[in-house]
Length: 134
Image (cartoon, rainbow, N blue to C red; front, side, top):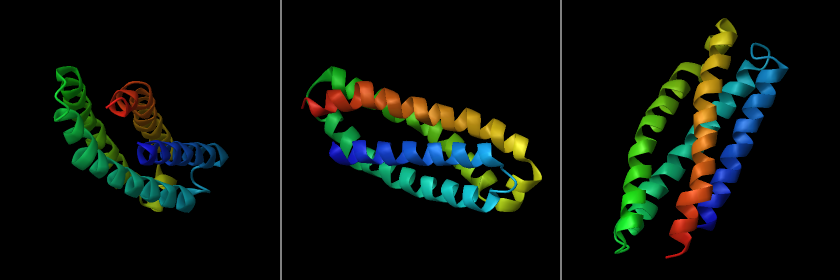
């Protein structure tokens, strides 16, 4: 469980970095924003793989229907968010696109990164404590 919590802390730091860079100027910080997006995407990819391969199966096999249902719900919900985040990364990982349309980036980032932030917080409040009690 410690790894999942560390991952969340790092992802939240990355989101804050993206926010800070955006506030300082999207066009002027396009290269750094692009790098932060790619770095965050890599971390999230490994984090999701660990959840899919270890955490969700562990909860599903726990012998507790409530934990199996919780696992199933979280895994299903994450698919939509992962797809939205993937589209966000694909669109905005290129500095020239950030420079060409900073307001569209800001709008997308507000939507996708807020959803990601809220998801991480829900996992920290509900999913991980439940898994930690096994």
